[in-house]
Image (cartoon, rainbow, N blue to C red):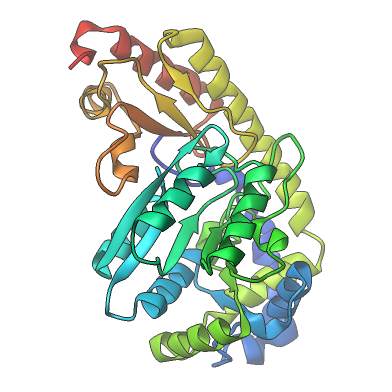
Length: 365
């Protein structure tokens, strides 16, 4: 059996199967005629209202989508509108949006990050060096793939820069609530007062990915445009899934489940950090996330992730090589390790196998 450090998905025990089954049944009994019919493209109204209150906006500014990635597709398609355009991303960044942007014909410019997240000075230089971008895509908290979190000071600077330079920021925040330690910083959306920033999140990490419920918080103008795009795409959203999530929240299951998930994933994060510290050579380094699903591993000089991956798969271990998260080169000696799906025992065995391969002469290019 393969030990997968590649899968950024929750372990089966993270999923609240019984509670969701009860919530789905209750949602059908309480509001089945609505949940099983066509409805407003903006989403199931009680859930939309709860999200609006949570983010301090009017319900009309919230669009509930079939997962947050669909929201990204809607927004990027609208902003690029078949004519292409320039989009700024972090380097490294989530690989799925990179593929979507390529399909849309976008010119993707990468902005570097360090252990404190997106380099705001580098972002300013990038804004000065080319045409105005359609938007900046960023994951400020427990970033995929690096696990890093943008500092509060940099969040403030980003919010100010968005206002000063008329820069639309898409803040993707699926992991923010999956925090194990430390104090949560304010979102960029909050610091910007809800202006110049589109906020995106999902219940995939806090409830279950299979419910496919994500959402966007947008300006009034953008919300109307994106909702119209949603109508033309699927006529109605999956109201039954959204009603199930709302019932899960309404009956008080959300917070206890989140605490349970935090505990399960904290143990996995700790096991991976302990294993890396114990088994990997000093020449390697890695991020130390305070939450989320991933950490970023920089291999010793001369060890390329692509070759290591080939050999690791022969030994029954897999991960995602760092180069997959860069739009145009980078990350060749890095890897993303996901600790969310594997067991504590698998983490120890898998890291030990990787360390042995890194130490072997054949690991060096």
